[in-house]
Length: 295
Image (cartoon, one colour):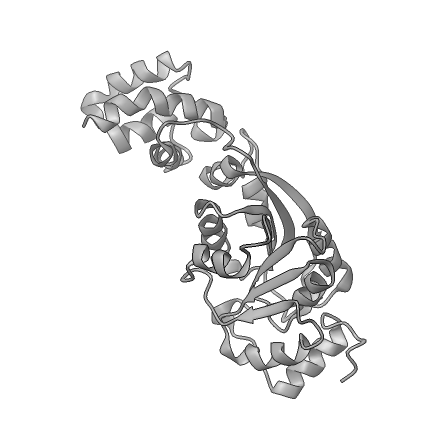
């Protein structure tokens, strides 16, 4: 097989799949990308150089891995599907700077992985075509682990990308928007048609770039409580913030206490969670903290 042909080209991808008799596993959300322009755009967004390293999740047959290896000094790819390991051994043979590990990212000890693989590389970028059914758990694990990351550039479901990048007052803005934007600056890089995947997914896709902030977007004394307040405020989107927070923290008998806290925070009780900025949630959390933690 002529390796002058890109792994991610339609003809090369289809030949590899035929050669190995490989059927996609729906349970793993396998959709292989077959468009070199999109692959190059994904890698370009990560701003990689030979002095930088990349972590890939779910390399498939190595289409994105190949482009990463052409730009970065080191690439480590985590693949959960054992059937793909011999394929990756073949397709990535020309790229000694690319290393494949048989691991599930959601079960992996990421701190140990970074110590073993990236100790001398400084900040690392995660670049991946993620399985859509576990996109959010993977991204949140990466963010909450506080790894030395520079960028996270991922292909994901367009609807999820819109939620992650949404601003206050929009229909897509919610607890996921705040969780992502607390840690990162977000950018929707491109939308991607279904036709460039095999097999074709049932949803539209998008490439999203997350740039890690040097410090969280807002300062709070209790991060866990902050996110608990945020999630509670969106528990039922049609309800006001007063009703959602009363149901979660105060109950009917103590609602007057909550109304007084909202007033002192400068937040109208009739507002809904989707209208509050991250800064307003931060201020509200600090006002709520003495009453919640004392109970």
